[in-house]
Length: 419
Image 1 (cartoon, rainbow, N blue to C red):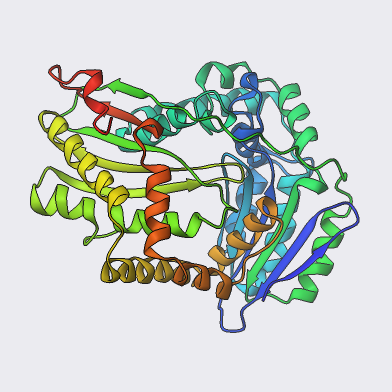
Image 2 (image 1 turned 180 degrees about the horizontal axis):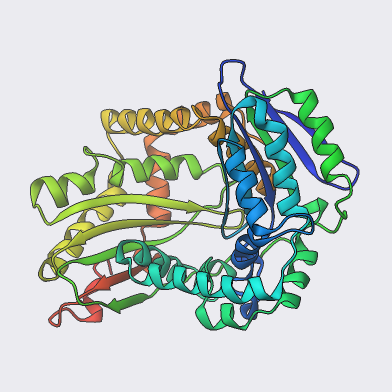
């Protein structure tokens, strides 16, 4: 059971001790991500995440690098649509040192102009690497299409022209607007002493300015479209999907079971039809991305360009079948076992527990218990799964993205296979 404390400046602390764990994980979550950026700021949260490792007011970049190695574990960070996380995984006796270093990075960044000049180029190369990874890029393209016109459509990495335009004052202004107590959760899990963690975290984070909690982002409007990036290749990467329910919606459990039945494993309908029966695609699966204001789902497949029309038809047949007929007892049982096992197995590491606790508190304001989640999964009926399919898989809700050699004989109209 996680223990939660809130400091007078709004910083939320959460600790979950596991007496059987041999490691400890710590994380500082800040509600600063691409969803909270204005168009001219796209990419700034990610650039700030990079820049904190270049130097703080008390440590140089080289000293930070040495301190990370001295921990004996690891320390890193990532940016997302809705938050930035600085985290560390260490052996128990290095926990206090790890938390001190995380606090220094999150609270004391220097934003040196010379460092920024170099790091901007590093981020530009990261963006170019994504452009050269079609199996990753295609997911960003689908999300941009599904949420077109909304803050969720902007890529976390930003755009090259934006990144090159940021100066130190831009970073400082954004940092001051978002890095404050009301936007911060500090999470610890594993082989920790909760009392010691709370005392140290209060000492380190009590001086953080309180600030105002980020205003809720409006839900996105429905969107539908097709995004194609031509690339010379022997393989075409395709995603088909649309909007789904947000993170806190009770229907999220029916949606997860729907995706498991649709494309969650070797027995799923898409895998059986497109790989086992036809051999059209080597990798085919369904997935989701859930946010506090909205969610999305996607179907990914790779294939030879000449098989595109046939593959689209097959995907359409599977999606239509899920709308028209409820899953049978055995199919629903397998999906529940798969989703429940995935959830439980995901809690086996101290890092995952730390991340789950921190993200849930930041985005939902609460941590659903393990028992609650499992009961919700097991309580979903076949009719609820079919209702989720009817909501999500309607033709007017679907978009498509593709990266690779688009076949000349396939017109834009061909992708509207469900209309």
